[in-house]
Amino acid sequence: MTEKTLLSEPAAAGSGVPDSAEEHGSTRAAEGFGPLISAEETPLRPLRQQIYERIRASGRIARIDLARDLGVSPASVTATAAELLAAGLIDEVASPRREGESGRGRPPVALAVRPEAGVVAGIKFSDRSHAAIIVDFSGRVLGEARISRRASVQEASAVVEDAARLIAEACARAGISPQALDAIGAGMPGVVEHHTGTVLWSPILRERNAALGAMLAARLARPVRIDNDANLVTLAELWFGAGRGLPDFAVVTIEHGVGMGLVLGHRLWRGAQGLGMELGHTKVQLDGALCRCGKRGCLEAYVADYALVREATTALGWGDRAVQSPTILLESLYDHAKAGNEAARAIFKRAGRYLALGLANVVNLFDPPLIFLSGERLRYDYLYAEEVLRAMAAMKLETGRPAPQVEIRAWGDQLWARGAAALALDAATAAKLGAEAA
Image (cartoon, rainbow, N blue to C red; front, side):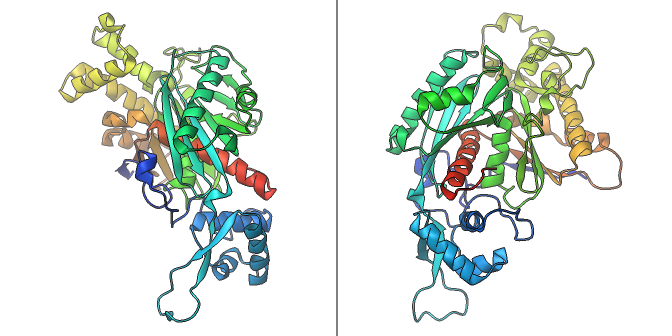
């Protein structure tokens, strides 16, 4: 039987993700952040990188525990830690005494990431607003900002100018200069070629094949990494949420569109060309409803917000409300469904069945142990009602094994931006360590 857990937001670095930098506080998170990978699962990487990442994931850890966890000699850990200390990437901090240890003698010492080692920014672009977050190397949120879009579809050059304004505002709130940023991560809806920074198609850009990563890097004069926004939600779960200790899991996002991210072996999987996991554009109906990508029959065309608005306009005779924003129409539709309007209920029920079909396909293709359903539309509980999850279980291949666990995440734009910050942190720390980013 499928399990469903309703959760609000994933824990950030051991203390719960805040809504603002003020709520986050100014102390280093004791629990750390980043993927929690056992020594047996650790891919072959330089020992310097392995040690730094283990310190970051642990929050604070003694040298002897590092040696044990990584299966290397204490002397190797001591020598490498000395290099990281000299480079200003880690600090020695007080470590709580273990149970049974005497309070006499020199206090135990642990290693922790040095917050001042660097600072990065993460940006979430969307069709209604853009959000940014500033994070230091210890995972602390230093500042954040949000600006409204001037149009739902823009030229890439206009998006770049919005990004410059957004970064300036977020940095001002963090009390730093934009030139202090070590890297910037950005999330864009649509099809993004991650390794080149090219947006092949996005519903919020007028042009195709936009070299947005290079344009942002030139305008902001900082290193920029850009990815599909659903991948960044997945990175946020991998770095800050319940996915930290899981080697494999899937994330399905339902917002202005439908997206997916996949983690295999503690690493985000993007496909051979970096263009994979476009669940929203898998076909669920031949010659079906028109998707905003220009094709017909996509899953997104039956589940996303514009699909629900289209159905409501037709089924409920809301043509006279065309001037209202999609958000207002969706809220009205949801209120009607909650109040017992059968036509409104039927719209959500139909969308839920298509979602169940998409989830069943994910299960049959990838067999993940856990699926996170994430995004703003998860406020509409019709999309993850028990009957939807039962339909998913019924549609998957009958193997005699239970369906994967499903957990619900009600994400906001700032938390999507946190995934973009993880992308930037990965790049910035790899550069400082002389290593290769994921």
